[in-house]
Image: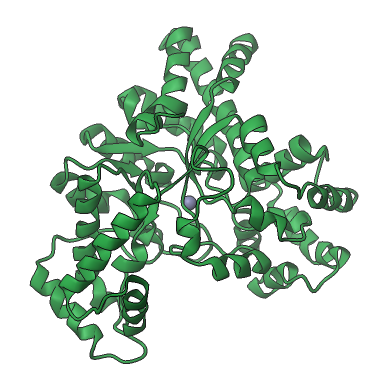
Length: 447
Ligand SMILES: [Zn+2]
């Protein structure tokens, strides 16, 4: 590859202010309440590689507990760190150390300095500095943790998040709605399976729930509330818990399941028994999203963490929804990795399916380049979203954005070199996938 061509593209791509399709960012006020060290960088992803490499869950919990000294943590952590240093998740942390804290590597000699610098970064304005100034991100579409909590962040962060719970889904963060655009998660309602949940909803929405129709009233109120709070889309992460095939289900079948919940005090019905009700409710959510003109973000492919069932999250399970709802806009996450070929063909076939590279550039930069190269040749340019950081910590969003810009510049340089694109065509494509396409689909006029 010609170095000059890459450098020219990379320079131009750096200037593009990103519309980031997906983050989970903790708020700056939450970060300010924590005492930070190196292990703040391990709320997810790299921590999952530690587990995959053989670290016992109990040891990870111990490192996160706050009961050990920094030196004790490092001694326990180091053997596993040496095992995972090759992965892209670990490379992200190295970029963070180098670019944001001026520490060359994460090792025996540097962990104290890095910890001190992370700790002293904990000041008002850090989030804006990293997201706006360093990462050149114009806005992030954010799923705040709470309702759909899927990661296992360090216990101190976890406690904070638990205490906020659903309020986090609704609160306007200090960076303001100009920067952080929330999506609404209704998985808690779709995944209803016990009486305790119904009692909580009754209190939250001040309504008696006796029938499925009452539950649908709650769903309506929940949508209305979140629309008032400024959501720009709907998000579902049920692929962490079940197969994402949602059968078209008659209301009476859903009602029979709903009624069963009242026969089970305590533990509730099983997820298997609950499935017709869940399927029915997912269709209800999609219908409401269409009415409100809200795109629907769907988790597909790799599940963060360990020990999940990958076949549950194959995007081909969604085909019946794509056929039934041509008016909907489906933003399909994570390039459906490893089902990337499946997503390519779905996005090529269905006008209502968009292919999203969020998270993908750090699962494997190489795979992300291969996929993008294929998408350039297969998909209309308006169907591709090029970047979503998918991090709890702003530093991760920054490093991920850097890798994404590198990746996109490399792929486009190849395409220009082969004569597939002219240079202006390549740059036009980059602006579309990094900014214009998500801005248009999510109606983000201010970005
Ligand atoms: Zn995510």
